[in-house]
Image 1 (cartoon, rainbow, N blue to C red):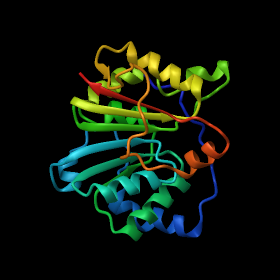
Image 2: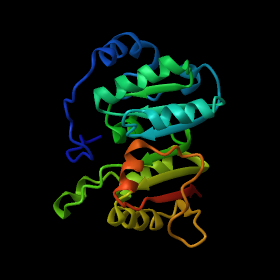
Image 3: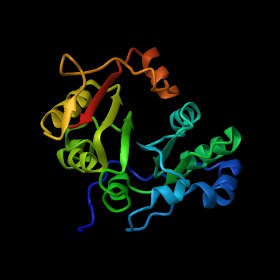
Image 4: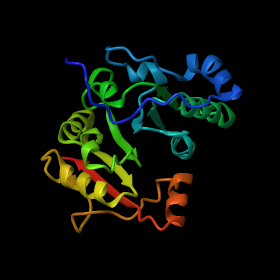
Length: 224
């Protein structure tokens, strides 16, 4: 498989606190999954067969942690490339006593391509990805036709892809890409956006955006 040259993120060093560094050393062996081009046995990793949810780009992990707390019957995979966010989420797993989260610190597209079996997931979540607003950077947006097709392959029939953004042009781009993929059906009766689902915790980033007057757009597409 050819190496990807265009990525949807920029690798930032960021400041890792002492607590996060401890978590990355002590907690990663229990809750982290190293990237390797081998398909994961999720039943073995979680020790059970359950509904599986993947969040791409967990940020500081607060949404993932809250979802896992609310839904102990489901298993959650979080993908994040930035070490401070991974460390913060590991600390949250420890403080909340959660056993239904595993983290992968690698490019999400490569994780989907190489580590997850087809029809392995019940939900894929993509909340507030970088909108790359400048036209010359649009090619970096993660939501592209190839990405939509890849996610469709990894979702079970009837599985759901949920997205959210506070950047209106990106919301329209997401809508257009997914509407043109025959593997997905928009759950919006109007054929566009859906109200914020109660199941999606509101993030600090989102609340800050609302204070600044940013409208948030939610999308929900079901695997046909």
